[in-house]
Amino acid sequence: MSYIEVNNLVKDYKINVKKRGILGSMQSLLIPEYKMIRAVDDISFSIKKGEMVGFIGPNGAGKSTTVKMLTGILMPTSGNIITGGLSPHSDRKKNAARIGAVFGQRTQLWWDLPAEDTFDLLRYVYKMPEKKFKANMETFNELLGLNEFISKPVRQLSLGQRMRADIAASLIHDPEIVFFDEPTIGLDVVAKQKVRDFVRHMNKEKNITMLFTTHDMGDIEKTCDRMLIIDKGKIIYDGTPDDIKKKYAKYRTLIIDFVEKQSGIEIPGVEVCEDKGNKVQFRFIKDEVSAQELISSLTKKYEISDFTLQEADIENVIREIYEGGIKCDENLCGVC
Amino acid sequence: MRTYVEFAKKAIQNNIVYRVNSYAGIINTIVMIFVNIAIWRAIYEEEATLEGLQFRLVITYIVLSFLMQSIFVMDEYLIQYKVRSGSISTDMLRPISFLGYVFSHNIGVMLFRIIIQLTPALLVAIFFVKILPPFSPLIALYFAISVLLGYLVLYSINLVVWLTSFWYFEIFSFITIKDAAVMILSGALLPIWFMPNWLYNLVQITPFGSIYSVPISIYLGQLPETEIYTKILLQIIWIIVFQVIGRLLWHCAQKRIVVQGG
Figure (cartoon, rainbow over the protein chains, first blue to last red):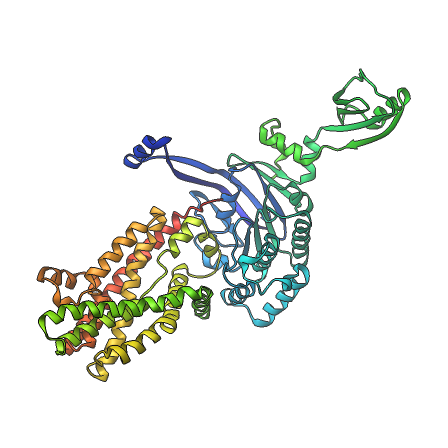
C-alpha cells in the first residue's frame, strides 16, 4: 500500500532574464523578458508507509522543488500528488497537521526566543494534549540532549544545537511523514552521527515515513533503504544504495606497498593508476580480474610489505553519474 | 483560536526582547505630542484665542491622533520579509491560516504598544495636556468601537499592500505611498475641518477618513447620533471591501509562491 503517490509531476518556473551590466539592467527594467524553466519534468514514483527514501541529485536538479510540492508549499504546474489520501496543496492545512519538515538551511524556531518557547507554541499549533507533548519532549531530551540549551535564545545556539532543536520540533506532533532537506549540512562528524542515529531510531520506533534530500552520501548509506537520483528534473535511478554500487561500481583498487622500489609492472587487465615507487595503485574491473589471483601473482614475483583493497565508493559512482559518465539504464529503475 | 492567542503572545515576547527600542518609542510619542502642541499654540497665539474652546478641541484632536497612532503600529515588513527570505515555507508547513497568523501577530504588537506606550502617553495627555473628556459616556463607547474599527480599516488596507510582496518582492515604495496617503487623507496630522473643501470631500469618499478622523470626530461630539451610525457602518464596509481584496490576493499568492534560496 503506497502512502505517497506521485504521477506525472511537473513544475515550471517563470524567470526574469536579466541582461548583464548596467545597460542590460536598464533594458530589462523597460522590457522585461521571461523564460520558462522546467525544474521538475514529469516524474512519477510512490513511497510506502514507513519507508526511508533518500533524494539525491546535483544542485538545481529539482529535488528541493519536488519536496516543496510534496509538503504543499508549492503548487505543481501539472500532474498530481496524493499523500495519505490528501492533496498537499489544496488540503494544505489538513495535510500540514501530519507532516513534519526540517530545512537544514533555515530554522523553524523563533529566532529571538528560547527554543522551549517554540515548543510551547507548537503544542498549540498542533493542538496536542499536554500528556503526549510532555512525553515526546522527554524522549527528545533523552535522545538529543535538548535540556543543555533549551532555555537559550535560538540565535545564540550553535548550528549543531539548533539542528537538534529543529529536528525535535519537526517530530513533536508525531507526524506520519517527515521531510528532511539537507539535515546534516554544516554539521561536524559527531553531530552528523547523532542526527542519523536519532532519525533511524524514530523511523523504527514509530514507523514514520521519511524523505531526505542531501548531498551527503553518508546520510543516504547509513539511513535510507531506498534512493532516488534526480537530475535535470527527471528520476534517473530508483533503487537501493547497494544496487547502484553493485551495478556501477565496476572498479576496485589495490594498493601495494613493495619492499623495494618497482617499476614497469604490467599485468593484463590491470591498470597502474598511480606509481609512487614503493607504493603502487592498481585499478581493475572486479568481474574480470580476481583480487585474490592478482595478489598471489604479485607476491610470487615481488616482496610485499602491505596491501589494501578498496571497493569503489558510492560517492565516486554518483559523481560519475552526475558528470554523465554513467548512463543509468532503464531496467534498473524498477519502479519508474 | 488558542493557537492564535499564542501567536499574539509570542509577538509580545518578541517585542520585549528589544526593550530599549520600546523605551525609545515612549519618549518619541510624548515628544511628538508636545512638539505638535507647541506648533498649534504658535498658530493660535497669532489669533489670540489660546484659552478658547477651539484651541482645546484642536489640541485634543492632535493628542488623540498621536495616541491612536502610537498603537496603530503594525509589522509592515513581516510578509515581505517572509517572501524574500523564503521563510514563508515554514508558515505554509503549519496547520494554521497564514492570514490568521499575520493578524494575531499584529494584534500582539498592538497589545504590547498599549501596555508600554499608550499607558504612559495617556497619563501625560490627561494630567499635563488636559485634553477634553469624551462628550458623554455613550459617546465614549461609540468612540471605543470606532477606534477598533479604525484599526481594522488600517489593517485591511495594509494587508492588501503587504500581500503585493508575492508579486513584487520589494514593496518599500508601496508602503511609503500608502503611509503618505494615510497621513494626509486620514486626518492624522491635520484636523479635517482645516482642510480645503476639495480635500475634505476627497477624504469623505476615501477609506482613509475612517481610520482616524471618524473616531476622533465621534469623541469630540462633532457628529449627530444618526451620522455616528452611518460612519460606523461605513467603517465596517471598508473593512469588508479590503478584507475581500486581501483574501483574493492571498488566494492567488498561494499559487505563485516561489521559495527563494533553495
